[in-house]
Image 1 (cartoon, rainbow, N blue to C red):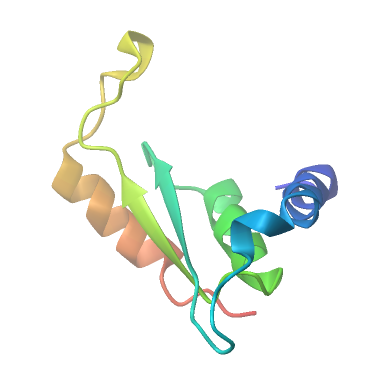
Image 2: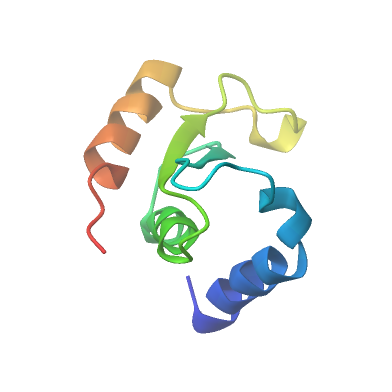
Length: 95
């Protein structure tokens, strides 16, 4: 992910503080990142890392789609295979 994309995510989070208010102090916040992951790649990893590095989210759940909603993207590898690729490539991203 390029610097402009990272900045866009950070700016969106800064512009929508109401989305993250009202949580008790110390509450862990989970980002849910849905993607086709066909295959997962560095840009996906960068999105996850940026979401957590902003400090708004303490964790990110990467959730590959089972079947894509767009007909142009329906030729996906099997779900289990894409899930395993996510586990191998996106888990334990260090800060």
